Length: 408
Length: 159
Image 1 (cartoon, rainbow over the protein chains, first blue to last red):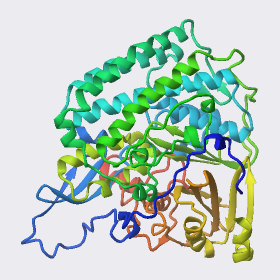
Image 2: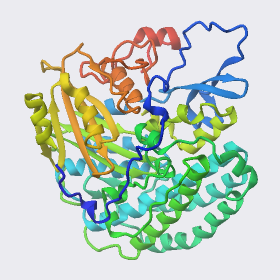
Image 3: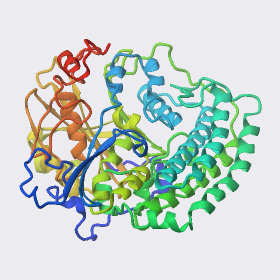
Image 4: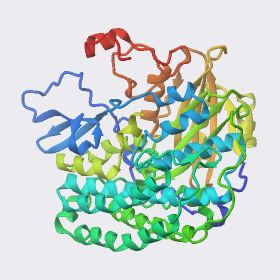
């Protein structure tokens, strides 16, 4: 153990703060996901408790999520998430498809960040096959994945602000996200479920004028991000609705396995792109933005800064895309050697991992997807207890979940 | 680390190895709970990345249970694997990592493995009344709980 990781150069020094007194997750009996709804309520007559359903059809749940809320007036006493409405059995499907055939399916999990899903899956299978994508493919992958991170964050910002009551950011972000989708469309023909990458590299060479389009976009978008910030960052209503709302401490975030911007906003400087670099990320300079309070506002500022850092990465990458092939030598019929591999990437929502078991045949024996949205959603309960109903909406928005990925 | 643990548990740790640069160990289910606690407290594996299972119907011990752990301080991952038979239960890890709550529920839902001491072990992705555990290998890809579909959706089959 203790073998050097490729990321040692910039090994993040993060530490779990064990001094935080009394994290909510320390005592599991205080942290229950269930509301004991089947228990007869002994104090029903003089109680103000009210159990209501939010969803599954509700515009602010970003999909088919049902949250059962136990309320005392406006105050939330507890929540229980009911999920699975969008369960399609992706992991079961994987066992019945070849490695190549399963590739497009992963796009349908986190459908607003399909490129990231594809990158994680392709890299996991490549690891299993012991091949590596050529440098040119890696750069193309980084550019498209970072563009997708930006698109995902833009979609998050628009819908999150809309939930809270600010309508304008939605139009602004969707207008600008369109430019990213246009690049995707020109690159591979699809806008959302792109299936941009193949195991071993990329299927498509960049189109004529790809670099020009990307650079044009890089010049176009920074003033737009400033524009979003102008609308929100110092907006009094926005501050009231997000400051100290949905606070999660560092210790709780780690205990709950929360990752991505939510973890970083709680003060953990950890990003898989730096900690265990994949694709070509070790070639680029960028910062990991963090927050201090772990509230909804910090998660907002972290994501805003991440957008700028993504642009920084793309700018570095697009100027020096290496020449060369875009596909490694992979057999047409893929039969990875018997073995297991876990590979994870920093998706826009957090750590997206694939655990693949190969039995040496053309089909994976088991594919387990570690979905960031699913794990992050579990923190909802701890974040909203004691808050108001309206804060539940804000917290669901700030967690940035995609139900396609929660339910798989 | 492995040597210390081996000294402590002897044959309880059946294998400690590395494949494609990823470390894993296979341990007896009887010590797994204690071992996970030690890994978190002493070895700083404070983040439980994932927990899942794999079904091998032709084996005597049908299920692989896999915990994927990560340590922020070491920037290192490890997989802990335990083999259990069908119907056997394991102690829940919820008191070690709160995140195990939903992950164990999913494994219960998909494989039918029970966890002792779990605060609320019930299905998570499939409907509550569903019969069968879909990720078992003997569960067909288009198989459904026809009774449930008929009663709740009012149709003969979803296919």
